[in-house]
Image (tube, rainbow, N blue to C red; front, side):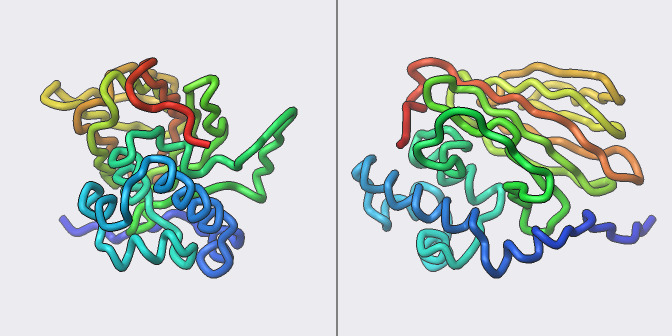
Length: 213
């Protein structure tokens, strides 16, 4: 049975970000610093991440906002937390994240959108995200650093979570799951409407995900 493709609703700030993206600039700045800190050449990073060198060059220049998969591949290649690529440098004190100025990273097809609610802090290696999936969309995630754990709770809709070779788990609203995310895993929206879940990611001490400022 053919299903009409349903995209996530697009807000004006997301559209603007595609042409004048503060997030793309933040990621570009962080990426330059991290490449220098890690002593990796641009060519080596392209090879380790599996990202086309021209595409990676545009990300490093801040002219292209990377997708979720781009950021995971870069983070895994550098051995750093995902959130350290989008965190603002030198943040102190109280931080308010306004709904009308979100830091949103999307999948290439736009059917998965994630928003950082608890930005990465290397002194407290936990990240917190809001994730929205389009109807019937499945989002695949590569294995993260050894010892990485994910805990998610479904806020809206129903979601199937598949982890490695384990049998997939179906979650309804209010259900939560905790699992080791150092194996390939996926999230699938089982319904015909948007699904929303909140994801907490924590890193194993000494896993190589040190401060990346």
